Image 1: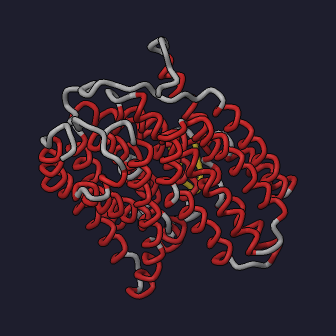
Image 2: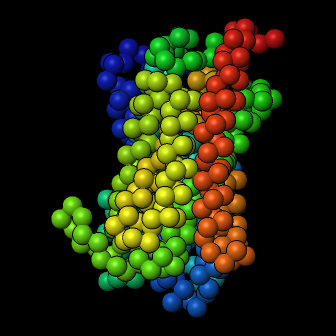
Length: 420
C-alpha cells in the first residue's frame, strides 16, 4: 500500500529533490575515485592496473545487484533500502581509509558498490513512480545528481588528499556522505498508485504492470538492453581513455583559453564534460517527454556517433578537443534518463525499480567491453579503430531506436491490459 495520503502536489517534488541529494552524495564513489589512485599507488607500491580492479569490482556490484535491490524497494518502499545503502557507502570508504592490502581494497569496493547500487536504483525507481507524467525529466534530474554531484566536493576532496592524505579523505568524506544519505532516507516515501494513462500525449505507456519475471520474457526488453550496452560501451570506449588520447594527440597540457579561463586542454575538457554529463540527463529526458523516447534516442545517439568521429579527426587541435569531448559527453550521458523512463513506460510503475534495475545491469555489461578499447588501440597501432567502432555502435543504436524499438514498443503497447 502507498504510504502517502492527501499529500500536496508539491510533495513529489520534495521526494525528487531528496533523491537528487542522495545521488550527489554517492557520486564520488565513482567520479572521485580517480583522485585516489596515484596516492594509493605511491603509498603501497601497487600497480595502477591492480588498483583499478577495485573500480571494476565497484561498477559490477553497483550495477548487477540493482535488480535485487529494486525488488526490495518495490516490496518494502525506498526508505530502508536507501538507509542500508548509505550505511554501506560510508562503510566502504571507511575500509578504504585503512586498507593495507589489495584484497581489503577489493572488499571495500564490493561493500561500497552494493551501497551505491541500492541508493542509485532506489532513487531512480522512486522518481519513475512519482512522475508517470514526466518520467524523462524526473529520471534525468535524479541521474544528474549522480553525473554531476561530485562537482561540488571534488575540490575539497583533492585539497584534503594533498594536505592530510588520501586516508583522511576516505574517512571523513565517507562518513559525511554516508550520514547525509541515511538522513535523506528518513524522509523518503513510497509513491501512490497512479491511474493508467497519467502520461503526456507524446509518450506511449503500457496498460498494465509487468513483473520482472515477465519482463525478462519480452523481446522488447532485450532490444533495449542491447541498445543500452552499445551506447554505454561506445561512449566509454571514447571517454575512458581520454587521458591517453590527449597525450597521443599532443594536447594533454596545451593551454586553452575559453569563457575567461585558461587551463590545460585535458583539465578543461574534464571540467566541462563533468557539467555537460549532468545537464544532458534532464535535458534529453525533458525532450523525450515532449517528442517521445525513440525520436530522442535517435537524435542523441546520432549526435554521439558524429561527435566521436569528429573528435578523432579534429581533436588534435586543443580548442577543438575541449569542444568535441564536451559534445561526446553531452550526447552520451542521457542514456541514464532515457532508458529508465522508456523501461517504466513499457512495463509499468508498480515494479519500476526492479525492472529499471534489470536494464541498468547493461552498464556493468558495457564496462566489461571497455578494456577492449586499449587492446584494440594497441593491436592497430592507434586510436582510429577504437573511434570507428565506438561511432558505429552509436549509429547502430540510433537506427535501432527508430526502426526496431519504436515498432516493437508500439506492438507491445497494443497488448491487452490483462496478462494472458
